[in-house]
Length: 178
Image (cartoon, rainbow, N blue to C red; front, top):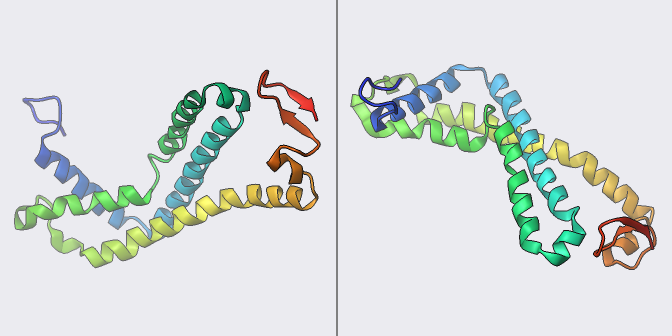
């Protein structure tokens, strides 16, 4: 909670908040951590996919102003980060607990309730595994559909820009048959 003199947290209060958040995470079930991390992995992958669609789906804009496409892609990627903010992302787990350790014996929360090995085993592994599995679960259908279209020959010429099929024109950005 903010102190009475300032509307923001002091550094010791921030450290206490992070330490209490790490202990609360340690008290939760590994299955809950795994499920939250799984959903976070899906959201992060969705943000990356949305960024790729925004950057790769504007061929006309990319030929005239490639910097604007990168900016658009950069604006879209944080959608996945914001969606995953309340879930268990590995980076959130990594920063939660160690911030309270420098206080040592003067820590506001007794550190005997949690060891580093227990925290890593219970929280970090579950979050890492959940993030990876969630990301792969979102990538699997897209990879399958891309490879199935590629094996049927629908994408062979489009990658080099010589094939038949629908393609974006660089001048107008409309679909045309080549």
